[in-house]
Image 1: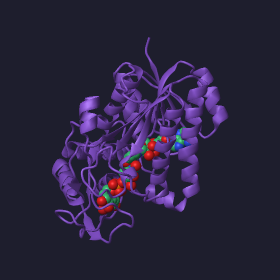
Image 2: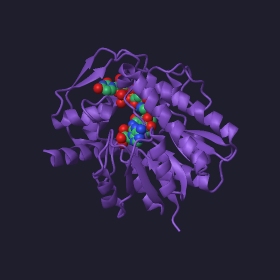
Image 3: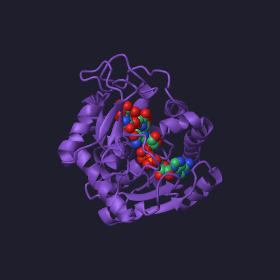
Image 4: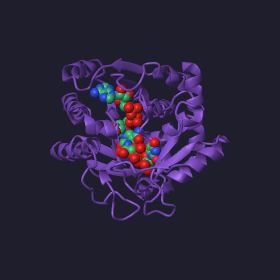
Length: 343
Ligand code: NAD
Ligand code: WQD
């Protein structure tokens, strides 16, 4: 009998790639998504890759009564992966209440429903944003948090605190928070990928849209930072590598292998890459020359951050395998594919 995993936000960017990997590992996947930032057709893309179309229940997790109806129908869920959230940092500064409401109510409702329906394992999408600009690099899981730089970042810090308190209070519930660094790229099939609405805030979708001709040029936010080449440094990991970590985490929960009721893992490559190096990688991998111009700094940007992923490497047996160039190439193939379909 296949174990059924609930993937909230499963038609979104990381959720859809995770659904593919879960199906490949023999899990039954049911998705909840309100399609705020994704489209129902993503489930068809998942089917084209995996051969199985996951069930998609379109509902808002902030609606507890609808969530309860969902769990009454799917009473056999073995574990939950909770991706659903709003994620645009800049928008969260303009609309803090929407971000606090959506990201925190959804988590609270989900945990309440899990308790009610006796579902005990949760994997939570956290973020390197909880660290702010750390004093020591690379960051490991014990690196102290800096004050959140945005309401979005604050929802991830508070979300983790909610999980710490909930798992402390209820010994049945176990949670694993995965702190992603910068996920990029798309499935190598080109059938699923990132679909930012409007003007992208993140670097790689901005690069691919510029290369495609949808944007005039990439604005690089500063090259006067205290880094080797002056550009900001991040830890970019391929979304398929990231998706696979979720399968490992779910198995760890289901097999009762967690060492405490609340665990945290950094998910990154362990290598810092500058914006300039990222641009060069894109150009090398795709053969496309990118138009870009260095402009002023983006307010609130962290100067440099990259992960110490050794806990995930040793404890989860997980590490990234895709190179930056491979990630850039898949992002580019996805961009071409999706624009071809939309034009
Ligand atoms: P995404 O926007 O592509 O996917 C999130 C999905 O959740 C969307 O399909 C959206 O429609 C859905 N959703 C949002 N609120 C909902 C609600 N109340 N009820 C039901 N569905 C809802 O985002 P993503 O990039 O796949 O990110 C997934 C998770 O990972 C988020 O929690 C995000 O904060 C976290 N994260 C993302 C990144 C990144 O760079 N992409 C980095 C670190 C952490
Ligand atoms: C990367 C680098 C920019 C766009 C964000 C969130 C973080 C996490 C990951 C969810 C930076 C530079 C970007 C552009 C540029 N998400 N850049 N021109 O800032 O590391 O993190 O996504 O949890 O919370 O804050 O990612 O992709 O926005 O930027 O020069 O048009 O690219 O300055 O150095 P970031 P990003």
